Length: 198
Image (tube, rainbow, N blue to C red; front, side):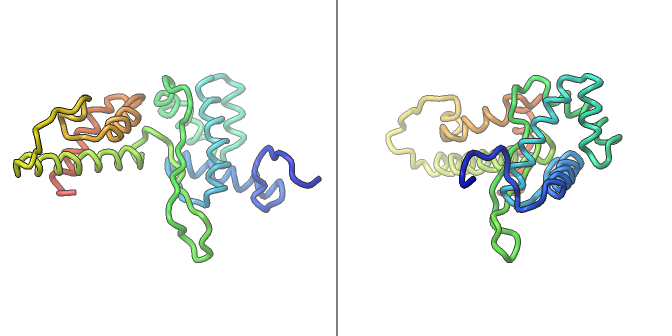
């Protein structure tokens, strides 16, 4: 049958090869909390990783057995999934992983992506938001120091007083919403980046 709706990407592999590939990617994702792969593989792995974290939030014996059947190294990863990762995502209603497109990494120019667990130590969007905040604060300080404030008009919003754009304020809310002590961690990272001169 030509066309039609597909339940998942076939990734140009047989069923057993595709399952082995996705299990391997899931094992790597939960081991390192961030992996780099092609975009279609990342999207398929993202779907399965979100299901695994939802299983961990249920925290039953059946869900633990199901998770053990997926990982290639079940003992350490099941303990990690049902321990710190479960606690991290207990209050979050969904969206446990993030796919970020990057430049093609291989010579064949295949579309590449980074798949990461959100609110983790290697959260790329958190680091990028901190860099933008540091850069916008430095620009606002340079403008205020030069006295080039034309008209001295006051903009509305909590970020306007700190010299932040509305989009940056929204991104700050996004990355700190479900992260425990998120605002303090962000300020610490922004201070570190400001000292580095980013």
